[in-house]
Image 1 (cartoon, one colour):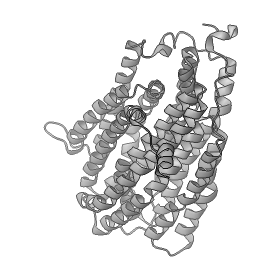
Image 2: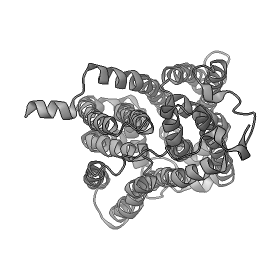
Image 3: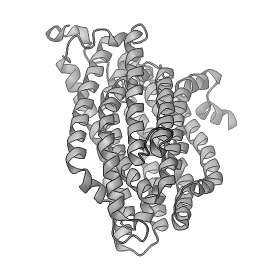
Image 4: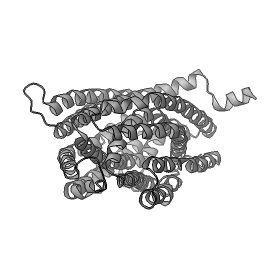
Length: 476
C-alpha cells in the first residue's frame, strides 16, 4: 500500500531537484516582492487609515490590470513552452511577438480606463455606511496614488512579456534577480519618499507610487538587457524585432487557444475585484481590514502559486515533446507536493498571522477584523492550492475553454452572486460572509479533481502547428 502511494505521489531526488531548481527562484522572487509590498503597505499604514485604504483600493484595480497582462502573455506562453520543448525556437519567437502585441493593447486600454474613469472606479469601494475613516479623504489619496501609478503600466507590461518567455526556457534566476534589485530599490525609495527623509519632502502616498514606478522601470531594463545580451540562452530573441509579422496559422492557433485564457484571466481578476467590492459595502473598516489581511496572505500564498505555475512549465514541456506518460506522472506528484507544502504554510500563517495587524496605525476594530480574515485565509489555503494546480494542469495541455469554465464562469456564475446576496441581503457579520464565500472553493476543488483525473488535458498542441520558417508567405 505504502509503496503504491509512494510511487504515485512522491518523486525521487532528481524529480524534486528539477522542480525546486525551477520553482525556488520563482518563489524567492515573489517572496521578496511580496515582503517588500508588505513593508510598503505597513509604511503607508503607519500614516493613517484613509491613506492605507486609498492605496488598497487602487492596488485592487492594479491587480486586475496585472492579471490581464498575465493572461495576455500566458495565452501565447502555452505555445511558447511547447515550442521550446519541441526545439522550435522560430515558433517561440512568433509566440513572443504575439505577447508583445497583446500586452500593448492591454496597457493602452488600461491607461484610457484609469486615466478617464479613475474616480468612479475608486468610489465603488467607498460606502457611506462606514463608521471608520473619511470617504472624501480616502478618494483623494486614492486619486493621487493612481495618477502616478499610471507611469508603471508600460514597463510592467513589457517586463512580463520578457519574463514569461524567459521562464519558458527554464531560466528563472534572472527574473528573480531583476525583481530582487527592483524591490530593494522600491523599499529604499518608499522610506525616503513616504516619510521625507533628509532633504526630500514628505510625499505620503504619492511617494509610495513614485517608488513603485522607479522599481518597475528598473526591473524592466534589467530583464530586457539580459535577454538581448545572452542570445545563446534566448535563441528566440535573435531578429525578434526584425519583422513584425506572425505567421497566419500560428496567430490563429494562439488566438483560438489563448483568447479564452486571456478573457478568463480578465474576468477572474475583475471578479475578485467585484467580490472585494461586495465586502466593501459593509464599510471602510472592512476595506482597511481586507488590505491588511490580503497583504499578509499574499506573502504566504507564493509557495502554492509558484508551484502551480511550475506545473505549466514542466508538464507543458513534456507534452510538447510528446512524453504523455511522463507528463501525467509529473503532474500528479507536483500537485501532491504543492498541497502538502501549502498545508504547512497555512499552519504557520494561522499561528503567527494574528500578530501582524498590531503593526498598523489603525483602530482596534480594524485590527480585530483583520485577524479573523487572516485566519479564514489560512484555513482555506490548501483548497486554493489544489484548485490552482488543477487550473495550470488543464492549461498546460491547451484546454483553455475548460479553464475558462473552471475559473471565470465558476466565479461569475456562483461565487459573485453568492457574495452579493450575502453582503447586500443578509444581516450576517462580514466575517461570516467572507468565510462562506471563501469556502465555496470546495466546489471548485471537486470539479478540478475530476477534470484532472479525466486526462482530458493530455495533448500536444504544437505537433500540428507550422514552424515559423516553414511558411514562405511569412518568411523573414
